[in-house]
Image (cartoon, rainbow, N blue to C red):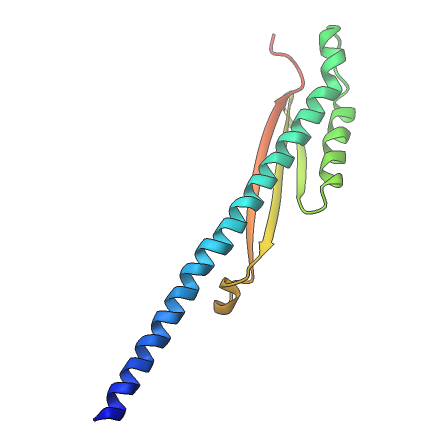
Length: 130
C-alpha cells in the first residue's frame, strides 16, 4: 500500500513540475517575444521616418520628392538593424515598412517550440495630400 501512495505522489510532482515549466515558458519566452515585437515596431517606425526625412526638403520646397532615395533610406535603416528584417513598399505616395523579428525560446523549447516570431509595421507620407 505504501508503494502505491509514493507512486501517485511522484506522478503529481511530475505533472506539477511540467506545469510550472510551461508557465515559466509563457512568462519568460512570451516576454522575450514582446520585446522582439517592440523592436520590430521601432525599426519599422525608424525606417518610415528615414524615408519621410529624405523627402522633407523637396516637399517643403513644393517639389516632387525623389521616392527612390526615400526607399533607399528606409532600406538602409533595415540593413543597419541586424536582428530585424523587413520590406519597404511605395503605395500611393506612402512608404510602407513591414518588419519581422524573432527570438529563440528557452523554456518552450522543451515542448518543441524553438523560435517565436514578431512583426511590426509603419507608414509615412512621402507626397503631401493636396
